Image 1 (spheres, rainbow, N blue to C red):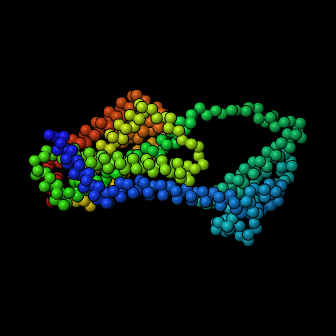
Image 2 (cartoon, rainbow, N blue to C red):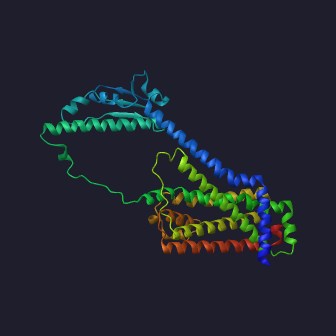
Image 3 (tube, helix red, strand yellow):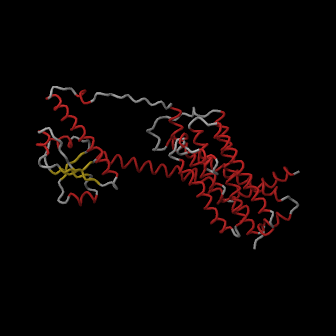
Length: 393
């Protein structure tokens, strides 16, 4: 009897949510359209800036040296002589100013070290690119001078390079793919799970309370726990669908977007039945955690507008762990993070994408996540049974 009641209320809540265009837009439009569009614009912007920086590199040179000839050979380089070089650099018409001292060639001929100054604007990416190509040219020119000095001394270039290290990358293609995805996917998943159910949870309690429909539902011969369970399941479904939409959007960006067009191909070989199971359980427990928390806040809120204010804290709670763990390799994540709420889910997601989930970490992370879900649902259930919490004041 209880299951049929829960299923009936669950169907009713989902039907109401799917009829609400605002909820659908928030759940699907942002992940499927806005996120790929933003990534596409970012990719195009960076690509255009890089092309322009390579095609035209205007620089000013003060002083004379054989280095100037090497600078002129830089692809796209143009040696300009503006009246006010510093002002031109700040205005962006110059990318760099090279100042060569008058005794530059003399010090080099004497076997000493000559200094020069390169002025650039670190706030201008094109100027930073100019600095990099100038640095490469100066190093190449220096190597030529070193080669001449060694030859004059009867030595070879190997005389100043007694050790030739060889570096081998032990990371497999699957590990490389997983490592890159581990920095993006956990953030997208957790934030989507948190934000995807916000509108639903706020409408299912605070919204219904404001419209007076929740009070009518509570007077029906249905246990409060059954109503709460149905609403929790409905919010979890919306959160999971939002997370799935985010995954689809990220896949589209990586496959077809300008950010991933020049990178190596991706391999999903890091997935195994065990890691997939951990990922699914982690997503479900995170969805239940956020759904329960959002229902608590929606129950406490006296109006739909007040509920929206409270919900912003849920997004913040999802973003902080995601950004804190983003640069970390799983081997560097402290063990106590697997006990903290949300942190444990993000940490387990990163282990999944690195292709190996530690058994102890998995048990601790999933166990504590389940404990938090039970506590949150118990708190929500207690609030839900209070008459004043579900009746509009």
